[in-house]
Image (cartoon, rainbow, N blue to C red; front, side, top):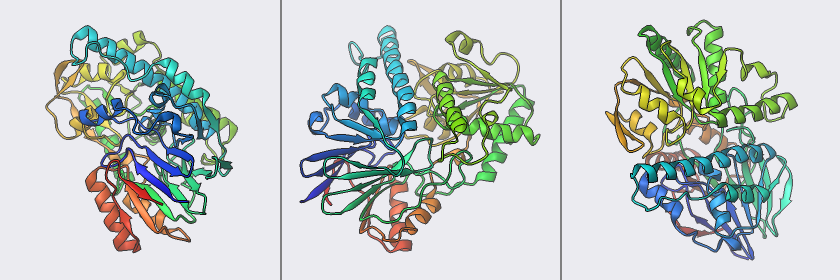
Length: 456
């Protein structure tokens, strides 16, 4: 029986991860991500799915970030009614993320129609809350290490150490071919999670390459954060940190606690202005209480729920935040594509006393990337806002494995893959990782083209 793999997303970009596996009469979608960033990428979310959605037997979600799960309600809206397999914690976090995504889409469509800054008349959301609820009903939680029959192929999910619940997927096809998909691979030194489970063997490997052309410098990153906070406070300004609600907010709270306890930053008020971030933190707190095995041992609730954090849950609280006193404000979304952070950016960017810390990967076409690249103005809700605040780029806070960590994880395989497909990375990063796989590991590596189909 001949099986095939089609790259429907996550090629030439870090967003929209979707990899379609055809194995006889069974059709499986590995990840179901939303395209984000550049307009031409976002337009791909509106294109009719390339195969009948009802023909897809199962979806496997690696984790609960939008670029891996955010298209699922749209797929359901188009007719998908199969099963969705993922871990329990991913299911819990995806429920939070997808509901928030539907709300943001509705809000953006409403604002675009009211403000007249849309080319579509009327602007409509990609999906609605009812589509999210239908999608969530299809989820079947899977334990790490459990073997699941997908109608011929068998699935096992292994801890990926990227965010809570994240997994790399091992799909054994009829005939014995083992396909491994990393999803997003975490780092050995994630402050909350254990390292990714080692790779034993794969015949075909799909590896992410987000940071395939660079290394993280952890100590330098923490020092630069402390310096930026102190510098900003000294000039009477506040610090805005756009942060992904799932995991990045939790990591930032953990690191701020480290800096405060060491006396490296002043005890400024810290606000978390992200209902989704607070809801995600509750899932992490539950995992700490339950002593989930994917968490590092010895964690206590206080590292994520310190007394010095002020929670902003209502829109009114959000609007009042960041008054005249210097403070630290953590708000979503992480790439500044939407959400409450836009209100704070509009207020703070014109003020040279303020600072904005970019604490993770910023995809091309996002406001966060524009700020990192030195934009002198950015467009928010149809109007341009001047950028006079200090912009500090801290990519070392990312919980994606860097190039060295990816190579080390792949090198540990007892039986190396016959071919490695390098996905989920911008072209320079994917190309650099491919060259290292070939040069250092002596293995065949390919950067696939969008919508390319290969035999397995």
